[in-house]
Image 1 (cartoon, one colour):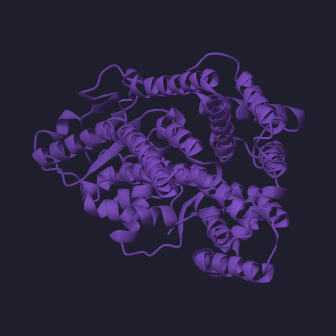
Image 2 (image 1 turned 180 degrees about the vertical axis):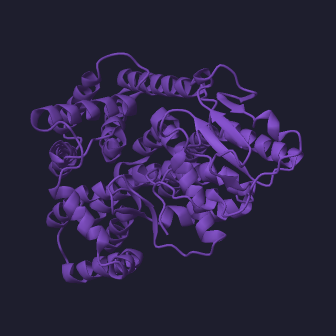
Length: 505
């Protein structure tokens, strides 16, 4: 006779060992994610205007004491990003003495939360195997790593879509936490990317699929959660005559600057989606037509549906997810950039994860194929990251250049200086926070002040006095070095008084 007590004990022990094995694997995956997000954190920080703007807004909150309801203005006039991302930066700016490298630290930590999120959500819905695969793909994906290190307010869009998917399943299961999560996610749309609202009808779709027990109570909870977490938006709109609401409606009903429309615009959007799918599936460095990768994902979902690995609910949800993005941006008159379509990333991730998980479950022969696919994905993406050429015109170079300007001004007794830029339009941005941090008083270039000229790229001029990576610096004219001429530093500090693109008080 079999001893049931011993059998139960053995079963519990096996489950515990299996759980520990998965946790250990996830821990290793998490360590890889940490390495890829913090390796050469300063050298790889391509500090540009958006990063300068983030630091400037944090300064406005922390130093100037301006408790903001909004962040920067988006590319659509009159519409602003919510301020949450900037407030999340504050602890890291404090800890790092207001050094803007805090942006990458905060953004990378948010990215690590994305690895945890993928593991948690896939484990709850599809099981441990899918959870491990999802967290590994998120951890090593060159696209995701680059996104996490970019440090811009739209960085958490990928995480939002992961939790959005989780909320769909919880609402479908008629769970109260699904409605609470949905209320929070709706309020976060303003802080991330307003086009995420395109996915909101899927909550209704999930609700219609649910058993709808005590549905009135759950809808009230959703509304209360949404209203509570959206108070900054409501306060701002009320105080400013619903300016953003009007601007949003106007953006949908007036021309936004794109020169193509109709069939040409549709083909353009499909091309960008295919291009993104290729970058998300492997990297943009891999050869081959971008449309092959789009067809590959479509084929994966067809296989998953035919083999009944996904149900009708999920199949229709994915179909809507893809189609609504294509239709909206094909009909929207604004010029479409690749990052507008980042809300589609989860569709690609989900298909890849479920397909690879299916291979693992079909026997040893298929399991080896799955292992080869995962290994190939990891090798290609990690190699793309490690071999990526560093653009030597970012955080390190700008910081060193302005450090030198500060040193040279002090050595020559300059109380202020003019700053000129010899570069293409747009590349003169991304310096102002550094000037503020070094407490350098700037003036508009003139004969009354010594002028330092920043050059990028260096081949724009015949010579420079100093180089800092890809940046060049031309020192003031010799007449200022005699010590007989003193700069006219009367008036304000232009670094503080000039307008800044995207920044409003």
